[in-house]
Image (spheres, rainbow, N blue to C red):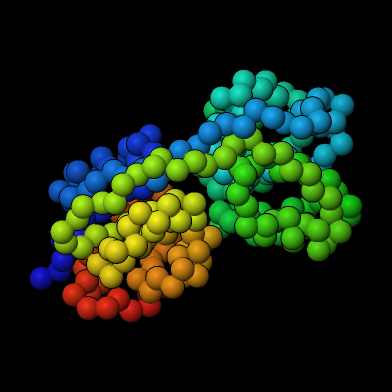
Length: 252
């Protein structure tokens, strides 16, 4: 008989809503355990959003929908002034459409910063200039690729992650932790290091999966994409296939 692990959702309630509903319909036990919250950052440096500055860029880059939402929270009315927008993934493109009223010029699939950087390099003229609107934490992959090919990148930080000061989970059995960012993984492990041997970790994206492996966690799974159907499919796969009764083996 497969285990019936507790599904641990670590994003903010708004982001967990659809997956939580599907888990309820499937009769799966789950708990919401948000690890981080997104806080807009109002200091935007040298007024880079002025129209005369924006025209200097070939594209504006968003690598997360949180950056788009942060612009909305900060009440910056820049939609009509932006150059073509390049984004990571369909969800960020949806947020650009909702908040800025624009269709994205490039939607990178697979939804990674590396994928987006390579598409931009292929489509833009030599020495093109890009503006990356992002959070305070970054892997640096996009910046490195763009610089390596001789392009220019300016960055504006519009949000940061803060810990939600959570206490350790009290779980008696096994669990599957759904993680959407390295920051969430870091805070989860800080408070729950004693549970590692009884947990499997499901990363929503490649960056989070790589971070979990660097933390020497062997029971690491990665969803094919961040859509709800893909996450649910992977959760069911883990429940059926993962051996929670022994030391977990490497899973990719």
